[in-house]
Length: 340
Image (tube, rainbow, N blue to C red):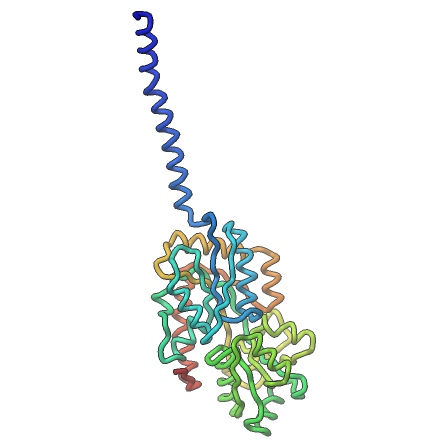
């Protein structure tokens, strides 16, 4: 019996060391789990839902899919584009505002949803400032005046002359009431003193298709949605709408320099998350956006489509949205445009 006591003593003495080792291992596992939970991306089994307020094929959809693919690579998650067209982006914007603020619901906010619509509609189901956490401005791009070749005009002055000769007979299409293309057309009518009818469609792709089919004779289209048709000769592009010429089409003049001084309209798109999304999450998303926009293949693709990649901090994008709200409110009031 006495010979067993030392063994028992040694066994008891060794137990605290084993317990400490087990506790240390558990602590490491818990620390690793806590670190994993602190990282917003990737989350096993989850994909990012990127809401787009317009149909597939339009400029916003093309931008979302191009950027979303790179964003997914950077974050290690799948980005699924969810097209929810309606009310010039209001439908998707409302869904995003009600989303879970964890970084896995995003909206490709546009000049329509976050700058024009608040002034255009008597009421909208979201607050463009209070309901969202800005992530980054993604891209900006000019609109381009595009006409059906059968119209027989190649310059802005020729279009103005024809519209004055045949008041009320020309139709211009747009991606919807209150869209940048619609307001660009209204501003054109005011400055050129011409009478043209507006035909709204549910998205840029069907609006452009209407001009290709001569259902409408002209459109103020986004460059990504129209540049291919212009380069192929299926549409004529007399001028761009911005104050300066586009790098994508440097030989195409602006509408302002083509006889309508003061005309300047541009479009943009950027990512926002639901309000209360943690800063760490929007910061991680912003970093992934900037890295994505730095990729040569993506920059080449966007440039080919006529988009200018931007990238910004969340605070910069938030300040930009506020300035755009003020600017477009003036344009809407000047055009006397209102949607109930």
